[in-house]
Image 1 (spheres, rainbow, N blue to C red):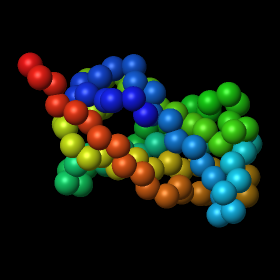
Image 2 (cartoon, rainbow, N blue to C red; image 1 turned 60 degrees about the horizontal axis):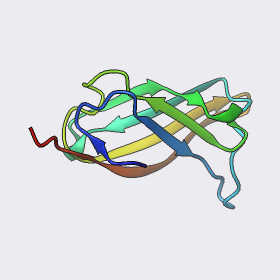
Image 3 (cartoon, rainbow, N blue to C red; image 1 turned 120 degrees about the vertical axis):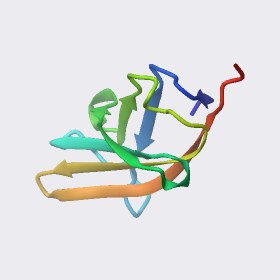
Image 4 (cartoon, rainbow, N blue to C red; image 1 turned 90 degrees about the vertical axis):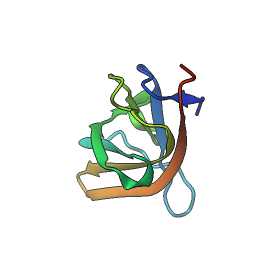
Length: 104
């Protein structure tokens, strides 16, 4: 993931899902997809609807930031995905990314 700064709009936050054996999860049959972002020091989690990347067959979904409030504070953020398909509801493991402060 490229460097992210507070307030960036238009940044793609992409999650790649793999099963327990390491194989990519085919998301093409998913009926809903979400990406959860938790602010540093667990100051709140927000759920965003996610879209498939290239039809979802390579296990990727993304959320594109739409307002400066999406990434509102600098620090270590947590990201987690969840998808639903006809067989069930599946959360991913959690990942981390850094949001840098602006210098102005």
